[in-house]
Every structure is written in C-alpha cells, then in structure tokens.
Length: 277
Ligand SMILES: N[C@@H](CCC[C@H](N)C(=O)O)C(=O)O
Image 1 (cartoon, rainbow, N blue to C red):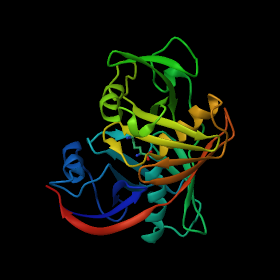
Image 2: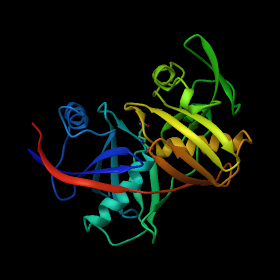
Image 3: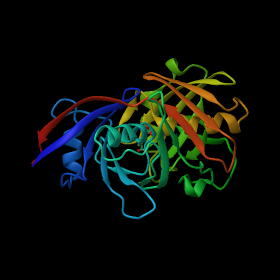
C-alpha cells in the first residue's frame, strides 16, 4: 500500500500525520515502528491518525501511536499539529474544533497569529486514575528509583506523568532515571517522566523522557502536567512559560477542577508518500 503522509512538529516533538479520511489506513504496531524509525523509515516521536468522528458532537477523531507502536490516550504537541493539518488539508474551515481522543474530547483553537491553544481538560490527581499505585493522596510522593528515593507528583493529562522537581534540568539523569521511571512497577500503564526546574513563579525549564519514545525535544502534556505539579506545590503561579529543548509553550491553569490551557506553535515540514507492506 502507498501511504500519503505529512511530517510536522511542535517544538521539535515530531510527528507523521496520516489522513485516514481520504485514504484507507490500518497500521499494525510493527508498521508504526517501521515508519517511526529514523534510519529505515520516515522518523518521528509519534504517529497521528486523523479519522472521521464517531459521534455527532465532535468534528474529528484523532489517534496517537508512540514510536514503539503502542496506541496512547493523549498528545499535546500533536493536538496543535492536528489542528494545523486539518486546516491546511481543507478538511475543515472551523478555527475551534472538538476532537475525540482515546482519553476524551479536547478543544483546540487556531489563533489569529497562527499559534494553537488547546483546552487539554481537567488534570486527574487521584492515584488510581493516573494510574499510580499508592495508598496516599499526597501531592508529592516518594518513589524508589535506581537505589535512590525521589519525590514525584503523579498527574494524568489523559496520559500518565510522573513529575519531579530538580535543581538543574541540564544535569538531571533524564536518560538513566527516565527509563527506570517509565517502567516503574508503581505505574502499571507505564509513565512519562518529567524533570522540571523552577526558574521563577512564571517560568520553568522542562525535559521529558516519554513513554514509548524516549527523551523528546518537547512534550505538550508533559508541560501541562509539570505546571499543574509546580502550582500545586506552590512553586509557581499561572500562567507559566515552559522552556523545553525545542522551544517555549505557555500554560495556564486555574487550579483543581479547572482545565489546563496550552498555547504554542505547530509546523508542517514536508509531505510525501511511502510504501507500507
Ligand atoms: N509528545 C506528546 C505525548 C505523546 C504520548 C506520550 N509519549 C505517552 O505515551 O503518553 C505530547 O506532546 O503530549
């Protein structure tokens, strides 16, 4: 099968975006891994599939696959690219759209300046719903990692995140500890591991070791989860600018029970066709 695709990125978190409305697409996990491979395929952190909505109150359905082939619930940078994609492809003229994801409905909006704001929904902190194995509801909890006890906040933005505050993100053991946290037995669905440095009340620096993709240049849901964690810990106040290795995102959160709003860029890099066996 010859598959048409578009390569996009949000702050260097890169995506293969596939229109499954105007072409028939059924990819196996092995095919996703091949397409995501940076040497033998196109290369990406996540592959996004744009589908027709399955219900009348939304505009599209959007599915997300990590580079390891696993389908996941949510992707923030991907949501911004998704909006730019459906506009550029003429699939809608609406600037504010409602999109079904595996974890519920999100509402992205294309702004006049070309940036995209996404209502990422209300963060979930109850351990069982993250999911995180714990008999405590404390915001900060101990986690044993590689012979050390670190302090994390477990947050779901539709997908699970373990956020830890560090003194210096550049010196943080992101690769070594990230891989251990991702597969820690207390996170039964695995987890995205965030390392956050607080610069001041409205600015943080963030690196994320993503579940199923390794460290990426930016993680949108990771930025939302990190801002929720530092606000709950009274280390920052909304709005917060998040510096990642790929650029900056603006995150606003009104506190428990309120949705998180994320604003940032989405860029199309190129389009092409690839044979998929
Ligand atoms: N890069 C994404 C998150 C993609 C999914 C994540 N790796 C997971 O497994 O939950 C973002 O921008 O949010």
